[in-house]
Image (cartoon, rainbow, N blue to C red; front, side, top):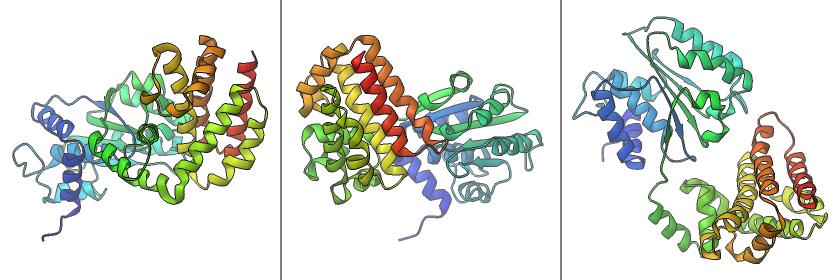
Length: 341
């Protein structure tokens, strides 16, 4: 079996994970109709970076085959390896993309293309940009200098400044083979509602397996359920639960992200019960339907929206190194304050 080179591997990943989107963009490039800036949104593992790099390869490839980059020429291989001078990649420096990285990007693209008239920049994990970095990027995105295409990648476009979203073309990446994912988690012995919950958290098989290691998913789900039921009863033990039950299970940033998503999901289920009359079998926390219904009746529309907004806003605090225990404690106290009215 012939081993793939890095470029062929990237192209095949894009075609495997996002066949329709990849084909669409190849046609857009062929028609010379590529927009100047895109925002790719979707959970990890959906092939956002592979699609962005494949588009860049198609723009620079010297030997296009049936509308696709060849994957073997020098241009394709250098792009795949982040070595092409006219395709610049920016990633978080630590937990965030700082303004210095964006200044570097702007300097690069104020210069003429090294090997032609086309330049591409890709910002991975764009939602980790500091506010200063995001504001610095605004004018550059809106008025690029010359023939420039930009691709901003994020797991959730709602984390991006609205002013940036308005200056880009949003592309939401569909989940990968959802039927296959459902079969996969079912084989792991999860209940129907647990399967639905874990698929709301991620569409990435590697992340699924990581959550299922050592029973972490079931333990954290049970912890969130206990915490939520205490909130329903206005029980301040929900606060002490953070240190005694949540924190021993949170060993890294991945677990932090999944925990916040799980907390968001339980209140999203309350929202769906309250406004859509959703039934247990359609909810991630459907086996807690009595508690969900009780919370839906307890909260006014405004109170529920306030809690959900607070939870969504908590993800920003991770980017400025606020302790995760503090984040969960603030969420808990905010929830209790809102519930008490």
